[in-house]
Amino acid sequence: MNKGDLIDKIAQDAGITKAAAGTALNAFMEAVKSTLASGDKVTLVGFGTFSVSARNARTGRNPQTGKEIKIAAKNVAKFKAGAELVASAAKAKIK
Image (cartoon, rainbow, N blue to C red; front, side, top):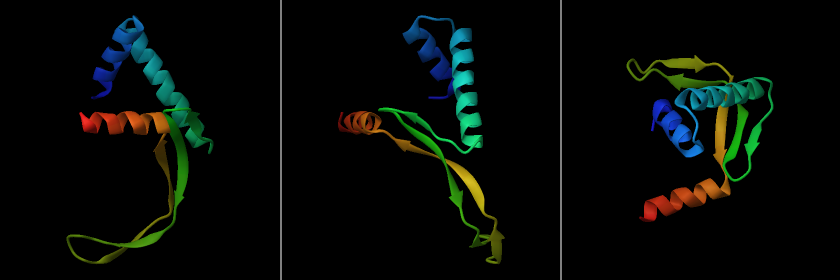
């Protein structure tokens, strides 16, 4: 499912226009981005938690040349699925 498919599904399930669903989805994504940028986390009970994690600097290897390269430290976004989401995904695999 891509963003367009998700907007269609939201519009259909909520009984709203695709434009309104798109606006709502974009607002949600911007809210998550700005919250993560400020260093906070977003928790949606039953769905999951979006957070920021620090990744240490490390040494990697260029796969083409085999030469060692330095990879800088950085912050990365991560998502941990909630119990209800994990349970529904497990049910989907059984069917």
